[in-house]
Length: 139
Image (cartoon, rainbow, N blue to C red; front, side, top):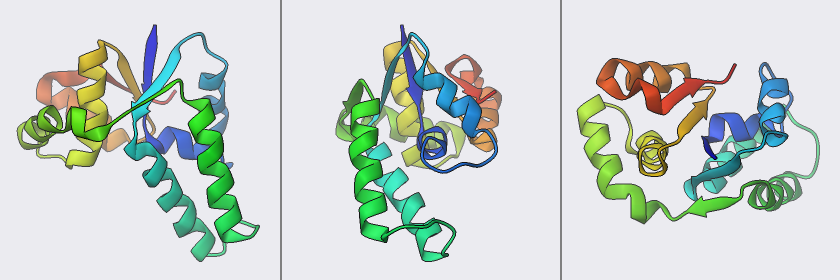
């Protein structure tokens, strides 16, 4: 069984915030964790933002580098975004939602799996657009 996770969930693996306990529990589940490879840059960017705002401690480049290295190990598979891009663009236009989020939906569709996201807007957009079975809110 496969579970798709997005950057909003993976970020919580590294930064304690609301929902981090739920996100961490996913790591202990039986499912293979899969994501588009853009998850690495999205999590790195989110950490960079927090570090710039001085909301996290540590040497900035070391924190980001170590988190990305850990994330690579935590995920069972990272799918190259270009493989998903044609369908993600179609979904983006159909849902009027950013392409980078739709990469995760395209992967969920391809793998016949569910995307778990802490991004309620993404999950609600998928639901309203008829793709509700592909996405669920981290809970």
